[in-house]
Every structure is written in C-alpha cells, then in structure tokens.
Length: 285
Ligand SMILES: Cc1cc2nc3c(=O)[nH]c(=O)nc-3n(C[C@H](O)[C@H](O)[C@H](O)COP(=O)(O)OP(=O)(O)OC[C@H]3O[C@@H](n4cnc5c(N)ncnc54)[C@H](O)[C@@H]3O)c2cc1C
Image (cartoon, rainbow, N blue to C red):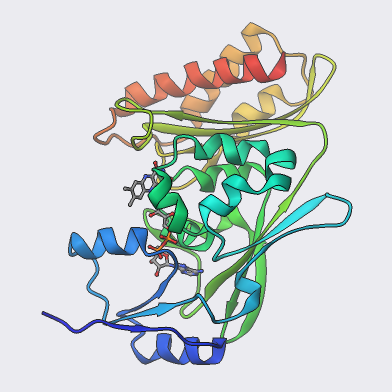
C-alpha cells in the first residue's frame, strides 16, 4: 500500500511547491468526488492530495457585475451553491435546469466548478453548458495567470490544456440578453445516468429569424465540441422544419461520434439529429 498525504496549504506558493515536489503523483483536491472514484478503481494512486480550500480567496465566491452582464465564479464553488444562487437562477436559469439530473444532492454539495472542469470527462453535464455560454476560465500557475475560453480547456478524454502545476482559479460567464438556452441530457437508462449524448444549446431569435446560436455536443465526442456546420445552416435564417432537419443531418455528419456502453455511433448520430431538431423547434418558437 502506498502512503497518501493530504495537505491544506494556505497560500499559492506553498501549493505550487507541494505540487512540483511530486509532479507525477500529487493532485489538486477540489470536492474529491471524481478523485475518490478513480482512486477506488485504482486508476490513480496519488502520493499527495493538495487541498485548494485555503490557497487564495480568488478560488471562492460568486460575484455578479453591477450591471448584471456577467458572473465570476470561484473554482471552489460547489454545485449546490450554484444551484441555489438567486442571481444565477434569475440570469442563467440553464444552470439550475442542468443540475436537476446531475448526480445527486450529496455529490452536488461537495463537487466543485474547478474540479469538474479539470476532470475533463466528456460525459460531464456542465462543461458543454459553460461552453455554450461562451464562458472563459482564469488559471493560475507558477508563471502567473492566463485566461482563455472554457471550450479550449478540453484536449480529449480526461485531458486538458492545463500546463504543469496550473490550477483553475475562476470561471467568467457573460449574461447575454435575448438568448434562450437549454441543456438536453439524453440518457438510455435513468435520467441521472451518464448521457449517451449531451447537447447545450443557446439561440438568439429576432422574430422568426435565428440571429445567432451556439450548439455544443458532449458525451458522444471525446470533448465538448461546437457544431459549426449545423450552426452555419441556421444562423441568419428563418427557422422551419426543413432547415432544422438539414441542421440535424449536418450535425451528425460533422463530428466523429464514439461508440460506448451508452450506444453505437449510428444510434447516437440518430439521437443527435432528432434531439437537436426537437430542442431547437421548442426554443425557436
Ligand atoms: C455518484 C456520482 C454521480 C455522478 N453523476 C454525475 C452526473 O450525472 N453528471 C455529471 O456531470 N457528473 C456526475 N458526476 C461527476 C461529478 O460531476 C464530478 O465528480 C465532479 O464534478 C468533480 O468535481 P470535484 O470538485 O469533486 O473534483 P475532484 O475529484 O476534487 O477533482 C477532479 C480532478 O480535477 C483536479 N482538480 C480539482 N480542482 C482543480 C482545480 N481548481 N484546478 C486544477 N485541477 C483541479 C483533481 O486533481 C482531479 O484530477 C458524478 C459523480 C459521482 C461520485
């Protein structure tokens, strides 16, 4: 059995030092829900877990800008805090909608925004939603802070573009007026199961015309993936059934869809075109 040390540094310098002492086997600790499962399955055998609870105040808190045009969310914010936050409920209702079928209250009470993003499992529900909201993240490392779009964090199955020693510090989410949003979690077993496909959709309508939109697919691909072809078919056009069918077909053709225990590639392609069409039909009405 290997020893596991749990550290709770009270500043970033100490956290970076602890992480670099055992860069292969030390892991940052958010809520621990994904780490514990992977350790139990013996996929990880970390020598040290570095809690981010006290490293820096910037890892905590939900702030709304004075004009309500954006939110800034600390990486250590739990899902339960997001789910019950009154301003997020008012301005970003798609978050509470996504939480309804995300795990269970025990997980949501401890799982964190940063741990969820860094885990980079393509089946997770929130990453495609943040991506469809055009959110950015700030990451901090020994070389300083950098900020980039959430969608650029994901590099493949459980892989991110974080550099060695970097930590996710905050999430920045714009609130864009006039956008209608939805997350569609298509499960083949219970509603709370891992999705066969996840679809995060944002649409801005001008009368019957789709002025702009974001379509992000997850679970069927190795990372949250923007459906650019399908978007371009719909952008600027008046929505009707033929156009929605063409967009659904384009979506299924433009990405490589993975076969897994939730369904074959063909089956998921079919789910994608059907659910995209259905959700857009509702949102665009
Ligand atoms: C029973 C159960 C059911 C679940 N069901 C669902 C579901 O229906 N839908 C869904 O989307 N998810 C589901 N999940 C997954 C859950 O969302 C993730 O486990 C959770 O989001 C991970 O967050 P965490 O804070 O616990 O991460 P942790 O376990 O603490 O960390 C995960 C990874 O991120 C790293 N890390 C943590 N914080 C940071 C940071 N700030 N910067 C850089 N790296 C960091 C860790 O080192 C680790 O590699 C379920 C989990 C469980 C246990």
